[in-house]
Image (cartoon, rainbow, N blue to C red; front, side):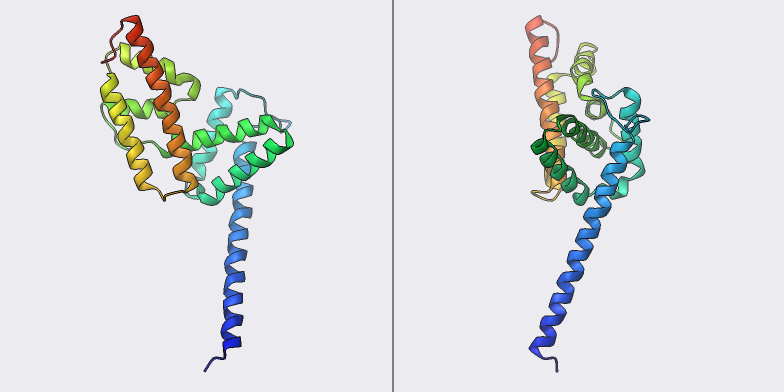
Length: 201
């Protein structure tokens, strides 16, 4: 029969094992975040914003290579780095990590085998933020999308994201905020189109 003390020792050992595993995950994720950031650095290991198209593609490629490692530990590290860099006044690094989070969200939010307006939502979501307005305007003016259909499809993407991810998780937070930004930009574009008399519905 085990004594209370031996049980206590086992519990402590178990807790320490879990803590070591968690610390290792954070350490591994920190290295991964560094790897992703370095993929966009120049030959001197420096970054200049805005990133070039090739630098953005390098980050996308790094995210694709590590698809199975884009977890909560990585996102937790990213937010911790943002807080630290913000406190230390490293605004460029803050913007760079935020860019990585945007590209992460764009990757995760792609709906497989999407057709019709869902495929158009995919195009907008995967595009860079600076391209959103022009792309939405082009799709609307070409008749590929209407405001009601696009906003409905975007709302469904939001619902599936919120319901499909752990409540309160970093993944849910990052992806939901990204979709809200897309939604706000879309509403602005459709409003401009309506004011100019061009079709959007």
